[in-house]
Each structure stands twice: as C-alpha cells, then as structure tokens.
Image (cartoon, rainbow, N blue to C red; front, side, top):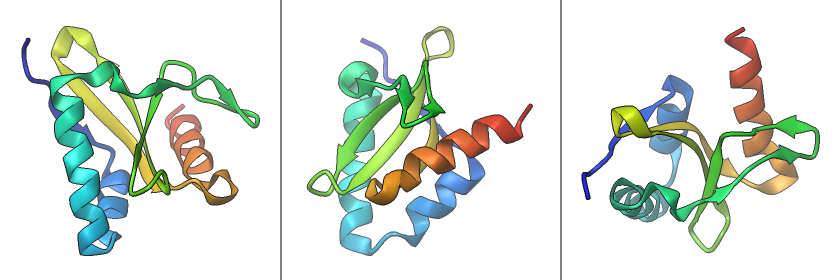
Length: 103
C-alpha cells in the first residue's frame, strides 16, 4: 500500500504547533498511522449542526484531541482541516467555519 502525504490547512498547522510538546508527539504518532491507513478515523456527518460530511475524525491524547481530516484517494493525500480539543465541540466548529469561509 502506498503512503499518503499529509497536508495541513494553515490554521490546523498552527493548532498543532501550539500543542504542548508531549501532546504534539502523540498527535504526530497518529498522523503516521493515518499515512499508512487513512481510513482508521471515524466518518463524520452532521455533528451538532456542523455538516462535516466527507470528513473523518481521529483521536489523540486519551481522546482529548481530535484531528478532522479528509482523504483524497486519487492524490494519495490526507488534508488536515483542524486539530483541537473536543470540549464544547470547538474542533468541529473550527472545521466547519473553515469549510464555510472558503465559499
């Protein structure tokens, strides 16, 4: 199986960089797993009014951190839309805002 390339939304990259070093390390570990098997994450749909259909989520750091991403099969690419805490659904809100601000 081919390895997928990881591409970050600029804000998602900033979110990753802001994480504590030990937490960031755990997130990077999950990203390595995704490169090998992008379908590991759970499919997202409409999450509390935020339509994230076509995106997936993956947990890191004792399920406290979420990665919201999309797989682009034809390009062997994983696009990371948001990295953050689940608290108050903030990571999903950020992901949805980024999607709707592109249009």
